[in-house]
Amino acid sequence: MKGLPEERAIMLGEYIAETHETVRQAAKHFCVSKSTVHKDVTERLQHINRQLYSEVKCVLEKNKAERHLRGGLATREKYKKLK
Image (cartoon, rainbow, N blue to C red):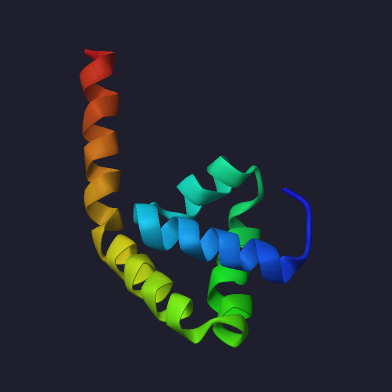
């Protein structure tokens, strides 16, 4: 996904706000790195669109609070497959 960083930040922000997906999932969807997605939605978006930034920030905080649960489920599935 090439283009202006500002346009990319808005597209990524809208996608995360609508789908409530993680940074990792958004990066995979748009074929960019996780660090690019994170920089776009935490730094660039803040200066471009405050409303969208606050929506994305809520989603990112929710995902961060739940990440230990997702990790535990992934480990559980891993060991189920090994049995």
